[in-house]
Length: 128
Ligand SMILES: [Cu+2]
Picture 1 (cartoon, rainbow, N blue to C red):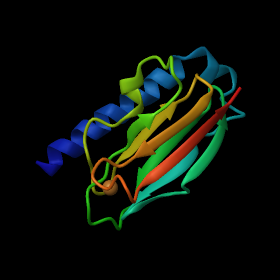
Picture 2: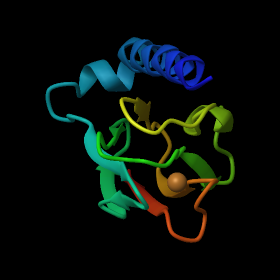
Picture 3: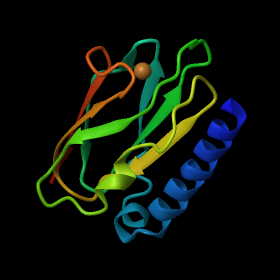
Picture 4: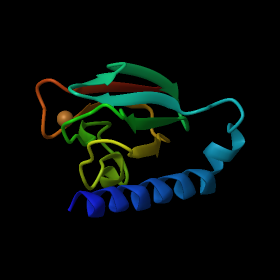
């Protein structure tokens, strides 16, 4: 069961990467904007807040020392955000997972882990 979840995660991560490299914003600013790294830990996102520019991306990496499953779920974001579902993972993972997402729309984004919603919170601010 866990193996299936991890495989699904890997597929999701690949989709995320190919979508990002196909986007004009990403290629135009590729050298300037390395993804901001956020680690997914028992039981916090580190750091709990990141700021990027429009077209930049965030890469979540699950800590190798985790013993509980976590996910990344967009709780709230800009009003007219397109493809809202692509800002959340489809599965949970304990370790050895990554999730990368580009942010073409400026605004404030609030993420949680749906399994630990009161402990695990992350704010992403996307500047114009
Ligand atoms: Cu969690």
